[in-house]
Image 1 (cartoon, rainbow, N blue to C red):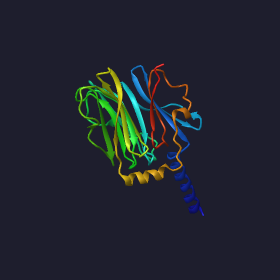
Image 2 (spheres, rainbow, N blue to C red):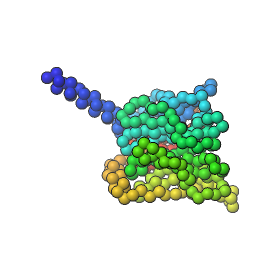
Image 3 (cartoon, rainbow, N blue to C red):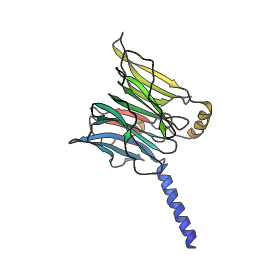
Image 4 (tube, rainbow, N blue to C red):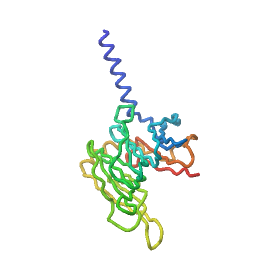
Length: 258
């Protein structure tokens, strides 16, 4: 009888851990930078129902950090990417929290790119692969680059667009109605003297789409209009609003310069 009871308890505990990791009641997450007295922290808060959790520091550095981005893949694994000053460069840093862990793994550089690397944007495709897009002046003027994670390895960075002589900045990644990966960004237009929107579509194979459409059934897509921002967000901070249960567009970059 005791052995049966232990099995039941173990089952309930494991089930509770699983439910916590895949808890659909976590509607949204906020990640932002808190800088005070030479210490820079990435803060995280989760929205359950209509209540935001108390802010939790998930990373601290003496270096200046900015433009955080957060993603959740179909297995519940989380990926956090941000820009951090390192010597004379601003590099992309990343940290991962594997399902069903509660601790974030040690932060590491995403790649060896130097110079200025800013504004990362992450999307999860129909094969459960994470893509990150960002702007970098690694080869001169700002261009948009991307890297894709296949298994445990990231691909070498590749330029999204053809080589040009104008700045390209602020990429935003999402999936379109055909479940292909889309990245849109601002490209400087010399004739008009303004930044205009450009985009590129990365086609995902049909077998992956078929599996992904199954996972989309009965999934509500949250948006910024569905949530009320908490009062503890600092002014003039880089903030990412993340919807972990969304499949089409998971993250929005917020401007709190008010």
